[in-house]
Image 1 (cartoon, rainbow, N blue to C red):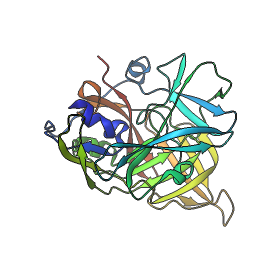
Image 2: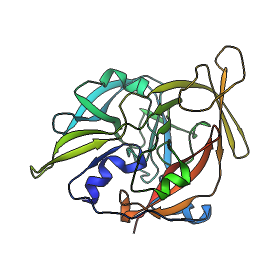
Image 3: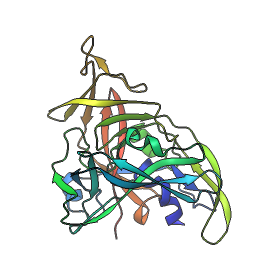
Image 4: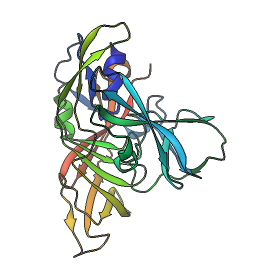
Length: 291
């Protein structure tokens, strides 16, 4: 059952859950934990970043609206694209959807279909070293840990778990801001044993609004992201009359991670970082239990 729950809520954005006899979790309490205690935690969602050295064919995984089975679509990522692999593996570059930073909808757009639903999970595995990839530093716009997805409501939303009704703001590895409004959808599902059920998805595949990040400034606990287009759903400040740096989004890292019970994660526990984004509180899952 944990595998079913983990399948699409992992990383708190993938947004799909299977409804067959899920265990009930009471309202959630959290505790503050030190950054040092998480640093060496085996359940921490660490990332490694790579630049693609030439255009590359990759697979994107969706779910069928007919029965929720996995549907694989192929697409080509252009040379120079930054992708993210799990920091848990030293001899392989492996994507871990929900734990590693995602690529943009812009790069996935040709794989989208009305017959499919879900985030569209980038799947890859390379044995290292490989001439296909060059390891690079974490881009300045990317969050330090996790999938790059921040969920609205912050600490208040955590206390309301297992209810999940947050909007989602995603910062992608290739430098996009994407805003997804919570929108619950239900689809039939059939598991490996042929048992029928229902799968729910919390977000549409296409973001409500998106913009390319054209500039990043960091000052203390604040990160400033500049775009030429306004992203609906978040409070950006207009700082120029036109051009690629017209709007600025301020992201403040509170540096006060919290741990709490969450049945969607390993050992039924998760940890999150708290951010203030455009004046409103968000959280992003950065670790799960690993005992």
